Length: 426
Image 1 (cartoon, rainbow, N blue to C red):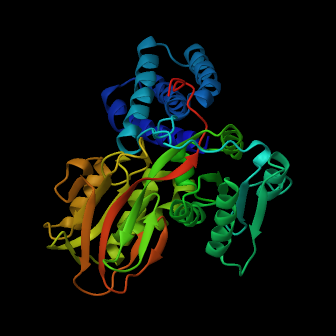
Image 2: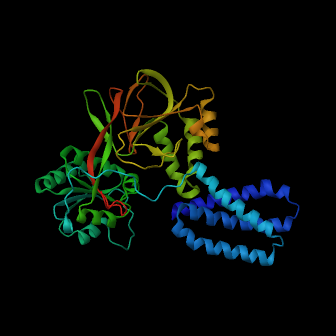
Image 3: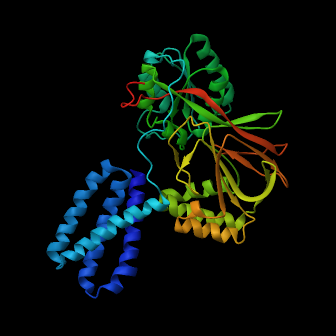
């Protein structure tokens, strides 16, 4: 609903700009044009909402239609003005998709596990760790996540991580008990919590139930677990899929898995700046404002990529192919494609900062020479100067050796997810 409202507001802004900058000089009937501009705004908001979330759009469209009918009776004397207003509004909605593509409602595709995940009626054999510091999005007058899970899964073992307790240790203990009982591990929290749980589940070979409960739940959304009820149903029915894990490893040393993304350079700063602004001004405007800020303050990193020295503003690697193409990857359509989606902005290109910002503003970054993209199975990185920050799934870290290999652990983790209704033959 929030995304639909933001797209509607952005569409109105575009429609208003068009009617003022283009239609007004072209039409001399000033008063009818004012009415047509109002019709364009109403149509724009309705079309924007309908594009993002059709079920909400069905409530908005009648209001826009009623406003159009009222304007026709009171102000508009030329039916052509109504058609122009509606066309401008619909066109503005379509134009928003150039910068902010519509995310499909369907969950990302993934194969079923070779070994079926156990059905756990009532949660018997399920060991859940709830991270109480993940910014759980529950209302103040309603039950918290742990209370809800205890009510709907009375046979599950539920541990709430308290401040000062080691989350990884709790997950390790819960996963070992689950393995002994032939059950599953559960984790409730944001992307950071789910990242830690997935690493443990993959290493110990136990299925994982991802309960979205944090302020950021990117992986849960791609997985299709958009509510706690979804996951509860899948756990009790034994419905699951397998997914790849991205991996960043020091040759001969430690490694870190990532569920969503890995990056270096200004990308992590950009994501933070965008997320602070997007609830107020929308995702794309927040991206532009954030990008201008981090480019003004930041500096490129000097790294070797597969043995080639480069100066990069950023390098992004997604666990699977992300959409849309360009600078604002948002969602995946497959969780087990075996590929890393790599996007890099080369600082060695003349006027790289200016060209980057202009390409983002015009929605043409995917065709710009400052952006290089590839889908690969592995990538070698080495810091050539300084000690650059790396970020994975929103967590920022440093690598002492400055050398990393990015690759994939294919179909490494089994995840509970409701079965797709149209996949009944699988």
